Length: 608
Image (cartoon, rainbow, N blue to C red):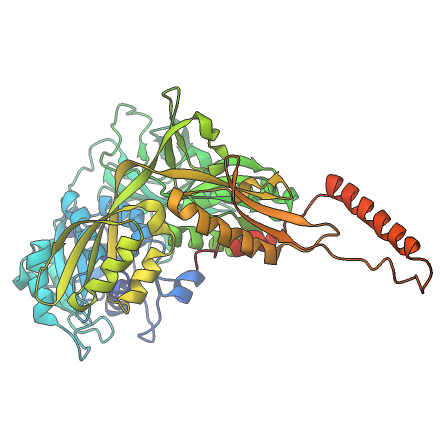
């Protein structure tokens, strides 16, 4: 029971089930996916290896970064053969775009909860995603083998927080394999099969993609109608460009070519698409014979929340970085980028991310997978600037702000955060949130042990290590989910950093008028230690417009010009010192201060 040979069987749509696993971070999604693959004979592991989390960074950090599809042949207890298309998704809030893509390709979702942690913030957010997408939800309580498992409390939380039937919740231990076969039976019984639209014109959603150096762009697709086979011609709906398919296949979990993909299938398509700009995630593939076929609706377009500049350390690597970003965007459609130049750093790109972890992971992947040597500037968010002429500008780079006298007011992006925690940690979490300019919206008590706080925050306060501090003050028990709610006017100013009187645009930042002075002082103090001493005194200044709010001086190196004077008249010594003074004055007029790369890298950690 549970295993059939790894072959692509010609099976009716009534025997296909498309589902994903969604949960909060570290609740055991990847472990459950591995146990399902192991018990159905798709893989053979030692029982502890993370098969779907194959990326080096995923294993290092213990998190899922990319959603992974896999086709599973399964024979039920009744003897029927099924094909299960599983998509394992990330749990961190920064990667919820991967969850939204996966939901669009499925008819059902396994909602996983850690028995020792209970329902957490991202669990709630993912459950709402699944409900909005019209999916059949199967609630599952994982890690029931742990001695501190709270099974009854988890059942209650399913009903109180998510509105799901507690009696429908399945009990599973992904580590030991307990209850996994019962879950597979529930998947084939509860999740509806895809609609059988084989005779309709081709329509399939691109929910992911990657670049292969030999085969070009490989699109990961879910077919909603029609079929695909090598030799067929396809059209990308948004661009109108037509290609000939040279390979179709499914994930087992490796890429396995097949003769044909049909409506309801999840697989991949290769058509020798060399230009990465010709195809994008969320697009629809149709047949050129039926150009009137509508695009697949409901795919969520995500807005970048955090921005930073990426520059090659070696300026000659600019083109190489551009190619790397093009290929990376194909693999991760949530990033956006545009060209920019900096007087301090040369030519580079302004890149938008969904959050700080997303930014860290992207930069690390560019360095490892694409062999890029990068400098990243300080992260910022996009502000709305209303000028005195009544214009509204959306600016994500502080160096592009208008002059202070041209600004009427600045609006900053706001988010609404749902923070779930044990009741004993409410005090420290509220204190942290109030210090980050948070406004309490509501406080709920879903049960005697847990509290849900709803706060409105300026986004810039959350990207500056709020999540890490939240975990610290709650001893790791608090969790957070957030959504963008719009812009709000604030008392904000742009702070410039001047090195030897020259503006270093890469160090400019936006801050509240109240926090501008202490932050500017901390920044110039740190710069004083990072910039090497010169032959002349170097002033470091933080300024708002023409007003200097903080200053530090880098003391000059002193050359002992009196070393060769052994006695003699004092006028001889005075003459040498005067000559040195004049030389330093001329040097200061023409001297350029080089800001080392370590300064830019170190200032990224200023908030720490």
